[in-house]
Every structure is written in structure tokens, then in C-alpha cells.
Amino acid sequence: MFFNSLLTNFAALEVGQHLYWQIGNIRLHGQVFLTSWILLGALLVFISLGTKKMENDPKGLQNLLEFLWDYIRDLARTQIGEKVYRDWMPFIGTLFLFVFVSNWGGALIPWRLIKLPSGELGAPTADINTTIALALLVSLSYFYAGLSNKGWRYFEYYVHPTPIMLPFKILEDFTKPLSLSFRLFGNILADELVVGVLVFLVPLILPIPVMFLGLFTSAIQALIFATLAAYYIGEAVEEHH
Amino acid sequence: MLAFNFFGATEGGLFDINATLPLMAIQVVALTYILNSLFFKPVGNVVEKREKFVSNNIIEAKNKLSEVKKLEADLLTQLQSARAEAQRIVSEAENESDKLYKEALELANNEANASKEKARLEIESQTSAARDQLSKQADDLSELIVNRLILEK
Image (tube, rainbow over all chains, first blue to last red):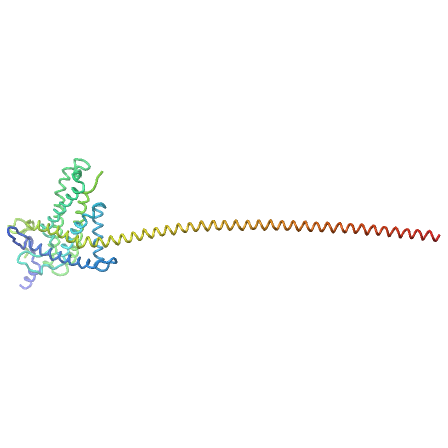
């Protein structure tokens, strides 16, 4: 009896249950916002600590932040190109940091110890709303980037090598956000489920390698998301001759 | 326990899309602006300032290096011309001293020859004078002998 209740407490898996917040007519997934606020708050505290006293000779946190900045710049520059990467670096960097912090925060912090009336806390990126929001922002960004850089000539891209490409390129505009959002959502949710089921079945030791795998997947997914977003923007601003 | 509630739930479900989506999008856009002013701009300024500083220093060092190389080459040509000049002066001096030596030698030779000639002439004249005197004495002597012989007869 005791063992059974212990299991229930530690490893009850709730899929598709949400903590609903009702504001007027609209309904929100409260657990997504709660975790995202905690994680983004931690991120902002970390960043303000690191940039509080900037020196020409970097030390400690500033060093780490500069490394991160350099990493994001390289990512944006290689994908978008030398000409306009500066405009898009903050967006790409925010996507990377948001996804990374969400994934790792969801995997590393034992949210399950905090009891909610309904649903449970977890990675914000394991909610389809978050990933679709991110993917749609990417879509809007590459359209905006293309139109603002090339004007109506942006649409040459749709018939670029030959006009035969037109239907495929139009289709791509739908598959890009779809694949972006579902890739991230599926990976993070699957990781949470696998770890949850393993913890439920074998609470000791066995889940640990899977958790490490989860951390790896989380980092890779953040990198993939940011790289693809940058690649799409780069594709939209690229000049073909 | 394991409450799998995937699709078709009246409440919730995995693919329950609602106002969370636009609000999350707004939140991410806001985060972009916050991170831009808090992270990307200040860190970018510091990093780019340092990169500029380093590249400026490298350019300056390269300029100085090329200047040093130019000066070195300049000095080398100066050294070479100085060496050639010295060589020229040395050989000139050698020629000069050679000429002087030859002149002095010739002068001395001539002088020696002249005095030798003079001595020879003197010796010759003295020899002939002595010979004359000797033959005169012999004449006298023979005359004396002849006279004596004649007288004794």
C-alpha cells in the first residue's frame, strides 16, 4: 500500500492535462507560463549579473556571456550572411536562449515535486502552443526579412531556378513552421515521457542515462531550431543572380 | 496513475491550442527586445570594441614592422656603398704608393747609375793618368839606362 502510494507520488504521469487560467473569455495553459517566467527570470538575472560590470579584460560570468554571444554571432553570420546578420542576431539568439533554457530547465529542475491542482510543471517547449508560437514568429521573420531587404523582388525566390518550383516553394512556407514546431514539441515531450515512464517503472539509476540523453537532445534541439530559423531568414535575404 | 489522454478530450489534450499561443509569441518578442538591450547590445559593444582594438594594434605592428624592414634595407644599401667606397679608397692608395715606390726606385737607380758612371770615368782617367806617368817614368828610366851605357863605353 505504502509502496504504491510512493510510486503514485513520484511518478504519476499526466499527459495532456493543463492548469487552466481563465481570463475573461480566454483560456491559458498556466503551467507553461509559470515555468517560462521562472526560467526566463533566472536567465535575465544571470545575464544582468554577467553584464553588470563589463570590462575590456573579461572575467567570470562576462567571459561566459561573451562566449555565448560569439557563438550566436557565428551561427547567425554563417546562416544569414555578412550583410544583414546584425539585424537578426538578437532574434536568433533569443530563440536559441529561450529554447535552450526551456529545454534544460524542464529536464534539470524536479518540477514534479511542486504539486498543481491540475496538470504539472515542465519544459515550456513541451507545449504545442509555445512551439507553434516560436515557429510562426520565424515564418513572420523570414517574410519580413525578405520583403524589407528585397521588396517585391523577394517573390522571385519562389520561381528562382525555374517556375516549376512555385508550388513546392509555396508548400514550403507551410511545412517550415509545421516541421519547426512539431520537431521541437515532439522531441521535448518524448523525452519527458520517456524519463517519466522510466522513473515510474524503475525509480533508481536506470533513468539517469536517459536523462543525460535528454539533456543532449535538448541542447541539440535548441541549436537546430536557431540554426533553421537563421537559415530560413538567410534564404529569404539571399541575392541570387 | 498513467493518465494518457491524447486526442479528443473535451478539456485539455496534447494538441489543445488556445490563447497561450499568441501570448507566448508576444512574450518571446518582448524577450527579444529585453535581451537585445540587456545582452546583445552591451556584450556586442564590448566584444567589437576589443576586436577593433586588437586589429588596430595588429595593423600598427605590421606598419612598424614594414618600416623597420625598410630601414634595415636602407642601412644595408648604405653599408654596401660604404664598403665599396672603402674598397675604392684602399685600392687607390695602394696604386698611389706603388707609383711612388716605383718613382723613388727609378730615381735611386738613376742616381746610383750616374755615380757609378762618374766613378768609372774617374777610375778610367786616373788609370790612364797613372799609365801615362808610368810609361813616362819608364821612358825616363830607359833613357837613363841608355845614357849610362853609352857613357861607360
